[in-house]
Length: 212
Image (cartoon, rainbow, N blue to C red; front, side, top):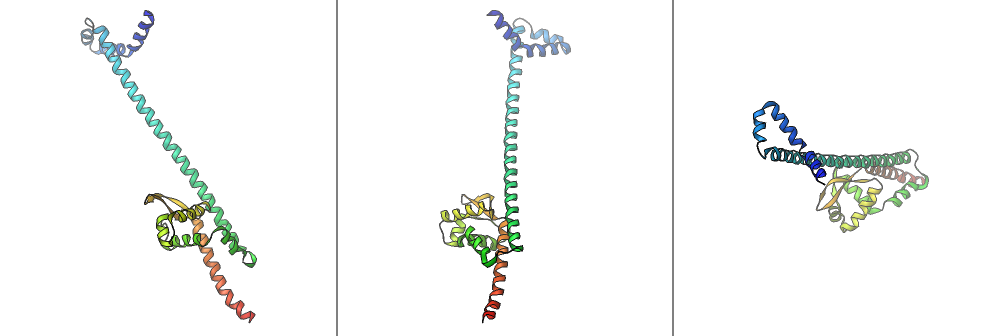
């Protein structure tokens, strides 16, 4: 037992003995003064205690830095994955609508498809953001006031539009709620709807006169 305690003490005071040896090289008299009487035991112990304390503090600081770096790296990875998914979904939607523009369905099936995906309130939400201009943002509470609906009802519409990549959640909040902006897919969707409306408005009178 005594030998074990002695080995532990020697291991603990190893940094202090090393510091004293360095002092002895450059200032032998100072080392002799430190080792007078009980100094040979106390001084190495105190120096070692300071060294081990410093090592623990530095180790904790390094551990904290590594942990913060790991969190930031994970957050960056999640953000990149989210952006890639949003970009892929937006590209997919834009390609679908360009395909429909090049090869429009017969007998008004295109309008039926849009009505199946989005109702009048969804279209009103998209148009409200479109009228506000590019990069404009709005919350469910603000849309509720504009459309005369409860925020909970508008939030359901917003979630549906986000799921279809028409909107995306923006950084920041208004009145404690998430805010949203139009995606490129949303702009493309509204643009295609306007084009289809103009085409329909231009064809209908001609059809009517032809039938007469």
